[in-house]
Every structure is written in C-alpha cells, then in structure tokens.
Image 1 (cartoon, rainbow, N blue to C red):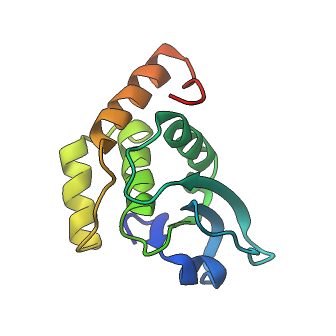
Image 2: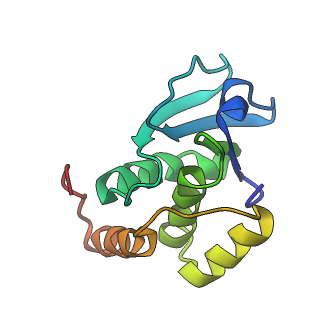
Length: 141
C-alpha cells in the first residue's frame, strides 16, 4: 500500500488480486492477463528498465484519475518495484500535486527496494506542464 487507495504489486497480484481491489492497471509490456471478473481492468504496456514514455504516463495518470479516488486501485508490473511504482509516483505528483522528492520518500518507505524508471522525474514534469496547459502528449514522444 502506497496510499489508502493506491497499491502496487507484481504479476501474481494482478492475476489474483485481493477482493478489496476494484480497479487494476497492468503496466508490464511482457504480460497479459485475464482479470478477475469484479475488477475494472486496463493495460498500458511500459518497457522494463526503459525511459518513461510521457504519452503512456499521461494515459496511465488519466485512467487512474477517474478511478483511484473511488476505491482501492492496484497497479502491477512484473515485480511491483519499477513500472508500477513509477506510475503511482506520477499520479501522486500530477494529480495530487505532491512534490517529487516527497513522493519518492513515501514510496521508498512503503516499498523498500523500489526502483523508479529512468527519466521519471523529467517525464512527470512534462506531463505536469501539459496538464496545466490543457494539452495531451503526442504519441511517440
């Protein structure tokens, strides 16, 4: 649990989520799953250990923004340490307006060993600027 409503996990958690989870975002490029029938499910594929694609990050933030406040949301990748953590961090920075350093400290306290993706802070800043301007991120950015 990173916050009351945002959890991170690995692929096993995605395949068999706890029943308290109503929303599931899978951000692992290398996996697809058959989600539990009660789960509001979406997949946005991020490459493991790769620089963050601002377009995908914006898509993930927008998807979470309409769902996370309504209940428990699980964001999953292979191990629940890189891509899922990065998406949750971006959400907390861009939607909740938290400072990157504060979010990083929170995540490291709640998920020891977490490794945000390369370029995450820059990608978050790009998404923040575009959100403030009311624009979307072009594909392939």
